[in-house]
Image (tube, rainbow, N blue to C red; front, side, top):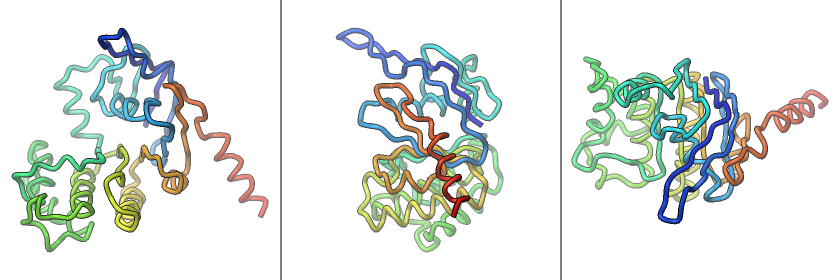
Length: 235
């Protein structure tokens, strides 16, 4: 599903070039649930942006769902995201002048789906918001806004879900509820999940944990997963 080969990302600043990602190589198979952890500034969100085709790398190769993102135009990248990727951000990124139903339906309309509003309503019902279809983001709690964002991300049945600190703005109980919904939806649809989080309990719910430090992969999670599987088999 995801292949990063010697990935580099360097951005310009007034103080000179800033090296964000340094030679990342990582493979994530279809259907895997992978958490990405590391201190602030380690490159987690930048890696997610590159995988989602929202940031162009400075070097290396990025292949997602069979697409080499490096040679694609902006229009082609937009089509790639529409057809393959769902994204959930910490800050919800809902359109404040649109209802929950409209927020979920709009990417489906862009994709040309005639059943956009029917599918949007179905997805909102799946996350427990069937009675809130006509409410605007400002009329929803933080947890309800994030559940709306989840419904929007899953509406087009993406192959890959990218989630960047999806519980960062939520209280503990609400965050747990949102994460349960996220994992349930991924399991139901067989969606590949890449989850960025500072919460080690949430990270541990994924089958694999990748650790980034200073733009480099310190641990790709394979050895940890193999040890856990061996221990489970020994019991």
